[in-house]
Image 1 (cartoon, rainbow, N blue to C red):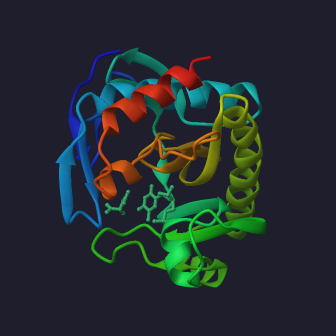
Image 2 (cartoon, rainbow, N blue to C red):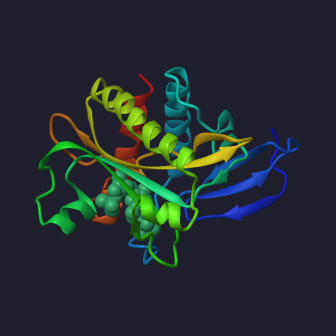
Image 3 (tube, rainbow, N blue to C red):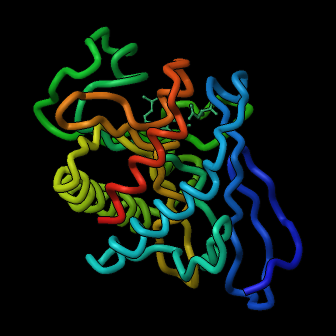
Length: 234
Ligand code: TMP
Ligand code: ASP
C-alpha cells in the first residue's frame, strides 16, 4: 500500500491518505516529546520499534475479540489503518499508582490499587489534555452515551487481555492510554499501543521499560523499547 498525501503530522506520527479512501497510513517517527511538548528529543529507531510493537498488539487484540483500526503493516514505519474519526477523548487505565496519579493523590509510585481506575481526558494539546468526566463528555457532545459505554467497556476488556499478555512475558502493565475512533458507525480502538503510551515495568526488577526512561532521563531508552519488542513477539 502506497502513501499518497500527508494529511496530518503529530508529535510521534504522521498520517497519509492511500489509494483506498477508507484506509490511511500511520507513519511512526523517532521524535519523542514529554511535559506537553516542552521536552523534545529523538529516540533512535523508535518509529520502527513502536510500529512493530503496536502491530503485534493490535493483531493480538483482534484475535481476542477487540475491534481495532489495524489493517496491515506494509513497511517498517508504516501501519495501514481504517480511517476513523477520533473521539477527542484520551482514556487512561491504571492498575498501579504511577505518574500523575501519584502526584495528584500524594501516594508513592508502585502502590497497589483496590481496583482498576479508568480516567478520561479531553484530547487537546493547547490545553494540556485536562481531566474530564462523563458529564463533560455528554455536555460537550464529545461522544454519545452509547459510544461512551462501548469505549469504557472496551478499555477495561483491553486491560484484562493485555495485563495477562504482558504478565506472561515478564512485564507488569502499570497504566496506559487509549484512543478510540468511529468508522462507518463502529467504535474502533485507534492510535497505537506502545511504550510511548504505556507504563511497563519488568516483573522481576521493576525496571521501567517505557517512555518514563525518556521523560525522567533514565538512559537506555532504545534498549528498553527493543526489549519490549522482543518480549511481545513471543
Ligand atoms: P500520567 O500518569 O502522566 O497521567 O499517564 C498515564 C499513562 O497514560 C501513561 O502510561 C502515559 C500515558 N499518557 C499518554 O500516552 N499521553 C498523554 O498525553 C498522557 C497524559 C498520558
Ligand atoms: N502529553 C504528553 C506530552 O506530550 C505525552 C507524554 O508525556 O507522553 O508531553
